Image (tube, rainbow, N blue to C red):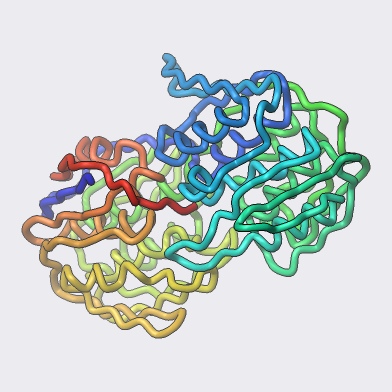
Length: 433
């Protein structure tokens, strides 16, 4: 399988365009199952995750047309009819978010058989809340041999659903099902992430009636039918945050374009506390650092608008060279410090205890061979490699390809010495959302 090699020491100077958001694109793709008309998604990222979901949608009856236009990449998804309501394990296991086809299939056809996605390396992340929401909407759910058998022969019915805690995936899944349910659905303790708003905006363009997205209470008035539309995928705040951390780590001046500062404000404030300069623009962000040593900063992850758990690994890499000791607390996912031992191979001083990691800044990092354990962990190792002496080689970068488009090209354009070492694909590589 491929590896990424980084020779550290180069400062970053230039511009990095931010792609469309992976976490939004894959839910918008699932929404194409809700209508028999074409859904055109612009600003589409080209990633392993979108490719895998495209394979599953094709099996279900969707025609997937990826195009590169003068204005950027786009995907047209057209499902004139559902030819199969069966999503097998071999496809669902490759990406957890593909489980979200369940709701649209039930909403449109009244039945579905979808594999449970299983666990992943950063925590169990069960789908209980997804299933409970669908049951509240009137679906009959049975579990057999690792599959969800769901039926709603009389259609879904609006309901009041109160989640026991905030769940982005469950909120999105309930929205995807409720737009075609009869009556009114109220979702309470809903996730407020920008991707929720993006999904609601697209569904409303398709004829849905969704109100309150981005707040803890979302109201959905069901409609009989949705139509096609054109929708631009929101910018990827996790990619933007990742490159912001990379710029702060390596030093220099990097302008992030096609993004919004407000989407990563919690991170930008921490970067400023650490000693880097942040300039917020109407169409992006500029990160500057003149080479002065970073300062240690404590971080607690949290639901939006808090510090994103998907940026925790990257920020930990930044803190490995900071002056002093930083405490990073992970409150969203258990077992999400698997990158710590790999950072230690580069010379980092990190002590993990439960959901807390203490990072004592060291004078320097040294290149070594390291292994990615998940998507965000993989890019944290790349960030560390940008400043490590000698060469750092990151293995298992199929994780990286799930969420970062043209990473070597984007970093290389700013002066980083980074290259991909081609290898044989792994037959047993698993993917998780």
